[in-house]
Image (cartoon, rainbow, N blue to C red; front, side, top):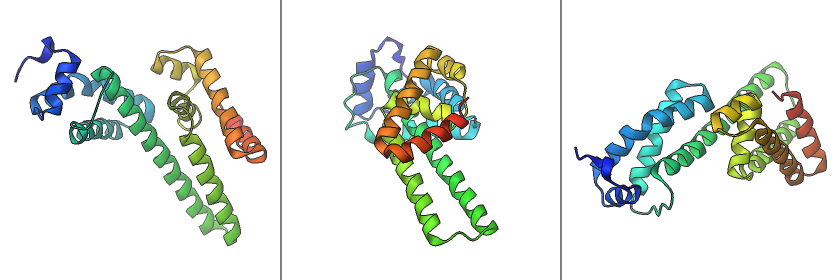
Amino acid sequence: MKDYSAYSDSEIWSLLAAGEEEALAHIFHKYYPGLCRIAYRMTGDTQASEDLGQEVYVDLWKKRQRLHIQTSIQGYLRKALSNRTLNYIRDQKIRSVGDAKILAISSKEPNAQELMQSEDLQKRINEAILELPDRCRLIFILSRYQKMTYSEIAGNLDISPKTVENQVAKALRLLRNSLGPIVGCLLIILFHMIAP
């Protein structure tokens, strides 16, 4: 295997785009462990973290000829991992909400209108969360769904706890605006009840 340590990121991107598998192997060996650590801090699941990290590389290889990267390799991989991990967290949360609904249905018989309204509300909330700016969405999900404290999030993302607090407040404001006053207020009350 070539020694890629003397190559710049743009040279490695070019080699990767040309289909050089050794360039991908170099990127993998250099950054994969760090990506797994980031994903683990976000998910708390070792297997999921490894899977998410591997999926980033599979996706990178599939898209190698179409990518026009203007950032560092590490920056690109971290952003790709964050987006993939956020989607994973969202999907896990939706699945757990779905499982809770199944348990609720088996324990009591709600009418069809109640189920439709709760599913519609959850869908609206999920869509509104996905529309948040990337950094704001990441911090909001880590705070409200992963139950991380502001200090933990600040430490993991190398930002101040005040920045975390401001981003959560911004997310709640944007969600309230997006969902309308009544649903937004209910959502804010709910998320304040589970605030770290």
